[in-house]
Length: 235
Image (cartoon, rainbow, N blue to C red; front, side, top):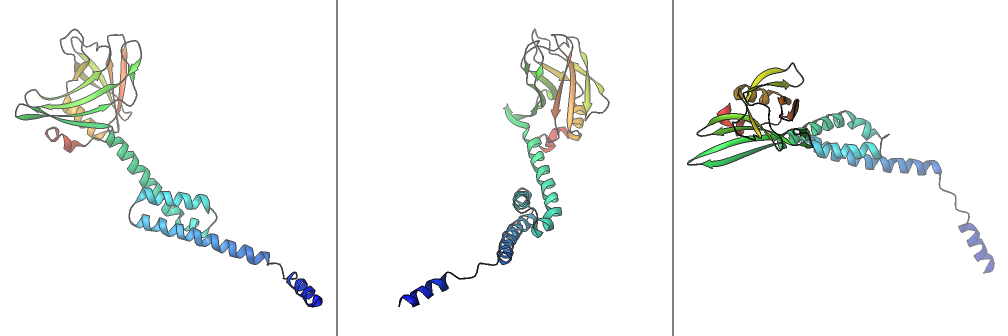
């Protein structure tokens, strides 16, 4: 009995070690299956035109399985999805910079489209503050475009010249006018029709204007997300 038990123990302890090459092959196959499953998710989102999700799946696949055949296969389409996803995000960002308002004026309505400068501007000799560009369609006063400060005043008492630049091109001169009040935080850009046309075409619209604190300041607006249909009377 003891001899039989001893033999059984010896035989049990003499099982052959797993072949490391087979183990590596099985592990590689498992990783390939995982990569292919993730690639299938990428393909589904790409084919559905869901660029953000496609990019996300592709990002994870390439990060976790960079040397896989699946990562190599989707590389080109992943770049395309990433470019389209970034374009969509940028369009959303630019669109979100604009605010539109409708206000009742008697039995009619006033429409406005407004956007803040991408960076605050120092306009009174102290801290930099927001500057807004507004296009307004008033049922009685008509259409107008103007800049609005939060502090300081425009040096445009008898009219002034503004330098308007579109996407870094050569500046063009436009007339400005300040309301006849003691302190004006608004200044009209007189050729509102041309300014609107420029805003519809531009990505960045910059306006240089004189201030009472001395010198000139420039406010730049990322206008590329303007929705002209929100202001139908201007088109």
